[in-house]
Length: 474
Image 1: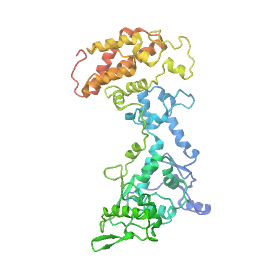
Image 2: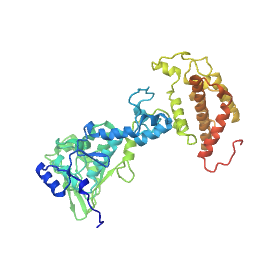
Image 3: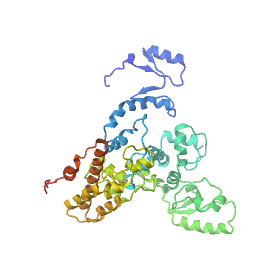
Image 4: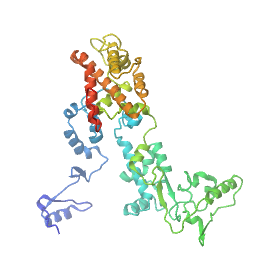
């Protein structure tokens, strides 16, 4: 025994499906208080209806207190991205800002041009899908027996493929009806699982997927209608003759016409199947090498196939040599989602003073290709950067042209990393200089810009590369 004692003065008795008189009597005997549901345990509500918004109100209130708006105001975009992934920060509810990129695209992986922010809905689908796997993986449990008896009327042994009963409520209803959330999710659950047949005791001959990528019911629909035992297992559709297995499917009548062709096809399929006497059937998931359901793989599989940016461009943007805030600026730049005066005007923001004039040269319209490429001030900065690198190039007229130059100018991976670093650092300080001129009317950075790019590039590379021995002068 641990020797610990219960402090009844700080304890409460909770009654579930018990009369009030019984609960009062128990509290009197134990000399403790009477508790009511819902109550808080370890910071989480217990005993209420989790579908109601008010049930989660204490949790939301606590998060709002911890993630106050003033805390997010001092964070860079890289810091906010980290905070989003860690604590699901949602910003201020009082001020509505411009939505530059749709939320679905932000939740795409960085390899597809998104930010890799966790998509809670897709993550929840992946987690719920694991219950489908567990229901048919062969390991027994009380919960599994209850679900099968209550929702499947004892007719189906495996998987949540065909729901027999509609008497489904709350949590189990969400799990069972998950296949209807999206077409891709439905296909993953219906066709992503298959049986590795042993003796065939648990596998439904017609309905389950155990031969190829489809069930025999879908492959041979005419024969399925003629079969007597449509719910029978594989083992019930044949018998062992010593150590040899012989198929014996029972039909309602003789096959005719197209039915004979299907019967021949079924015979070819079954001839390649070898049952293993005394071996258990195993529930496998196709998308994992070991056949296990992995939530991470399911989450990635459920992601949309579209992409915002091509793969090589994503590798350049998320260069490991620069901080995440610099990569975030490069991401917005390549998507043309920076708050330039042209982009603000397109989104209905009324501009005062200079209107849409470039904040650097005060001549052209301030859109990304002009601001970062054709602007004579920005062009001069790029010329100095290329000269510093010992490269002579005709300056492209678009951001994508500059990106392509850095992608194809150097061959090795290390050189491409350094080129990506130069592109991102130069873009970062061009945007920083533009904001200094527009908001603080500070033009002192003009003479220091190249030096800032050189120093920052050196410092960031030195901090990121292990064993970096070259000096700033080198």
